[in-house]
Length: 91
Image (cartoon, rainbow, N blue to C red; front, side, top):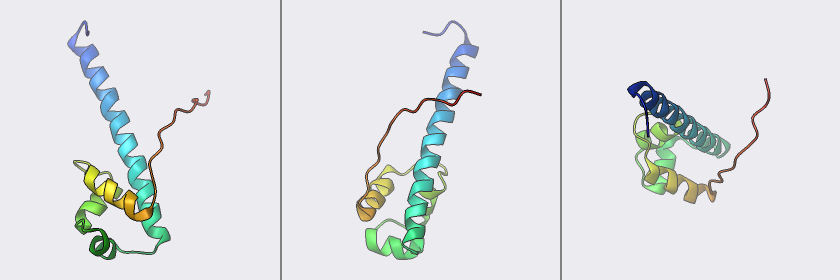
């Protein structure tokens, strides 16, 4: 698939950038939902059974993304994720 190691590294780097961007967007949206409810991560933890640090790690898109925590937060907020493509703005 790749002709050189440099091509492979560029492909992987672009994938990592995209993955981190998606995680950041999801985390920001979930943090905004928590702020709307004016709930601390400790209060939310008691309601959904996910440790506060895992909630915060998702919201800040840090380290390994905990998809179980994302699912529990979405269920609690009665929300779902929608993925869509948008045209990029011309620069």
